Image: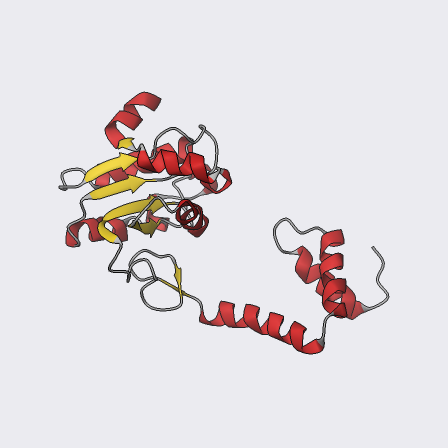
Length: 207
């Protein structure tokens, strides 16, 4: 791809660094911005810069937030005693879209995957155990992707929580093994949450 302007080329290269954006799509986006009023482009770039500069992570659940506590954790109408454990922020968004869960979340920031060099110490597991210990948690719902790495993570955390007075469940197998939560349709995901099963039953079924 040959450019008549180095400024245009630099902008295209930056957009092309985004996931799922190739050079052709990046060029289309940049040319669209060139057609916009200068104030529109400045507002766009300022919104991105402000987000990156000021975004925070909830000190309790590690979800993205504008404040010390996210909207979910600070909402007195949510069932604070029920914690849904997810891999990523995208999974929080997927479950919230179902409007079937009224508890709170805990974002692990990944799953245990030795082949990728990700161990338990790199995830938000200790803070989860601390929450369960200090907050009188009644139920932990594992909503991790149904694959080997997800199962390993469920098993590891389940062992860490052993002996604590908390019910441990996992979402039902409405999600196909090897699938990903964020790509599941809302009805399937909602059914998986409402039909959750004890984690011991889940682990025994996949062994």
